[in-house]
Length: 497
Image (cartoon, rainbow, N blue to C red; front, side, top):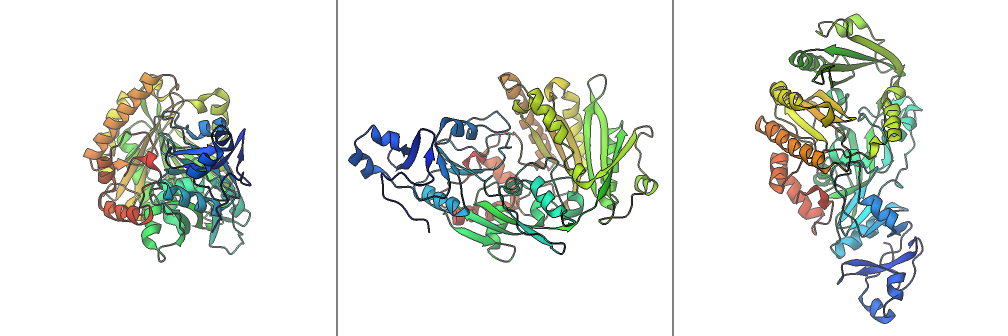
């Protein structure tokens, strides 16, 4: 195990801008630097400090690092940690989580910082950056899996596996997210109706528990931990490595866009497509018409070409669909270009300054039989000003494909993911508060119909709400929390325990 150096030693790898972290003061509940010690009596300081472990990486307390860790993509919640760990190895994560467990210091991992509502923030605690843990294991043409670090981005995994004609079967729409981040929440995309969520395509994990134990787990090895970590919102362990399933990748795809002017017809055709499986990818969007009403529905469907599928046949693929005849377009593109299709939009949003807007997102799982009745009032009440430079996603998921216990959806065979992903100027607090209140009301309507939330959004939630959310999976999650995070230090920003 990592050694604990003598107190007052400036530890290798712990230098930060203007100071070096030399220990933790349990009485003051604060990290101490050499600058702090210089201003106090050295012997008194030594006596009260708990020496931190020797690290391969860096423990940061400079203002820039702490400020960055007290913000996220949502730009709504701002809670400042006491320190940020930039690990040089998995051993660093083990050492610091063990240290924090001993001293009851809260901890949260942070990948690409894409949380919208402060989920990975820890006031007065330790944020662990996972981006340095980005190794991607060897891949060959006959590989059925690939092992990757939690900080690897899905775009990097795709490039590495596509070099050998292989791919993970499921991607989120934005592929610059970290593997550990999406596996902690679920990882949904247009391929989910075929292959399940990203969490359903993991064969093994390496996890650092809240007690600081490095554990290898799988469906047959420590299965209680495995199932508590996948879609477990970081409550029982920090993912440091994941082994992902691979399938043959297509070289090219055909991406169809079909327009509808009726919500019920749009949803029915989507349901047909995911149930008969004729497309490899099915999603949908809702946009505003010329009058500003959100009543334009676009079904997105993608057919893979060889070697993953046959050459697309338009007549066969579109047979029986009831889209507007004049509202059909498609493009042929390479598989990776399709996966990375949001890159130009993201670049534009960043250049225009919209990336720094607040993102009070709503993400719901709505029962199929109630999808239209729940969503229609929400869409009718929405204005272009509410959305800003955002997007509305709407597409079906098959319950039989979603096998991870903590990824909650409705009990019906088909549920719809309904996302209102708006953006609001961050200084317009009234608008942000209004969207948060609207999100809560929308969640209550979905819950009354038997739905729940997909927990990557900004819905004010109580601990009682979380118990309801996890439903029959709650006892197993609670037991795993007590076993693997007995001090309750992991990811308090979720507000679950």
